[in-house]
Image (cartoon, rainbow, N blue to C red; front, side):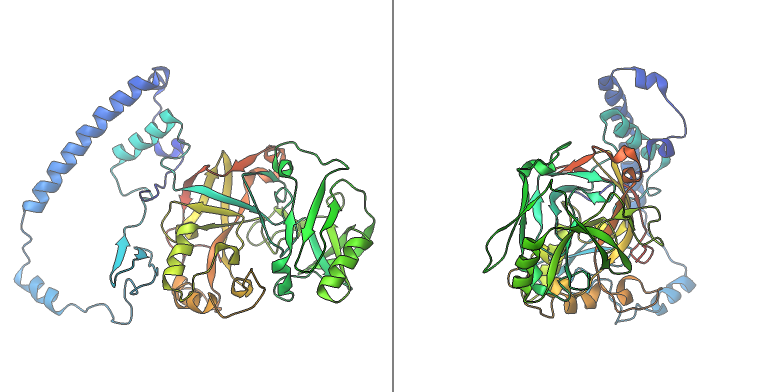
Length: 436
């Protein structure tokens, strides 16, 4: 796919309205627009030829200045050899050879004449593009019903007020009600969770026969009824939040206590009476269940591929646990996505995702290592990506999102699907400007 095209809304791009064109058949509009674009293209090509043919003459004093001009510092290369490091002006993609291929950044508006910008937006309105050329495509959607356990790849996922339906709706807690995560219990990486396939269909409601099935090495399958009424327990806590939750019962408690070899319980978020907010500094008004901080995490296949090019041993995407995986964009393009649209749903990029030690845990065996964090520190740290900000020794991979439609009833019944195009409506100029 070519570089993503960053478009503003049609109202922002067109300073005048053209109702007579809208009234005409779409095919006629496209014909006129094609002729118009061709004329502009030919004139611009001739202009480029003319400018290219003219020699550049420097005055004597300017020649001296040019010869003695200071060169870039040797310790600040634009592209580090064999890595996907990027400055705001470049997208660098590692290749197998010893050289590095650098791509110009995607168009963000203002780089073309106004006539071309208006024409492109008008064509988008004619063909229903929803924001120009897609920047990427949804490759996978992953739901994690139990916090820190394995995810489920689904073909589609409804959007609820707290994120994807069923995502992080359950959590395993210790005897004091404190949530387990892979940071303290890496064995959670081996716990597989399965849901009925129809659970991710629009408008589906569970019956007494529907269960969530949990499996783990050395354990018999555990079935959790999805429609059963449960008792309430108090003093359940995740990070700074504490409240009440539904207790999934003695059988589930015995199963997890046996697996972790210490008293444990499985609890479900009590939506009827509890509310847990996202970080208010970044996303005021948005809610989550048992996620760490935000309802959505987006990452791209291109970013993982670029990282794996420089790792001694490649890692799979499950190390980073995104719930929206996209493909078809340049590595780390998702860093800059301020506003995107997927299936008419608007997602806001609220924060670069700073990574804890979970990506260093092998999701196949629960063993903790040093990678990929050590490599990410060389080109995905505060020092590199956010030089004008305080260096907190964080590393970043992916971006946290919120969905605007989840704030009201407008989000009800909304779904995104694998294969949906991703349109970028607004972008940050660089990772240095993106919140983190």
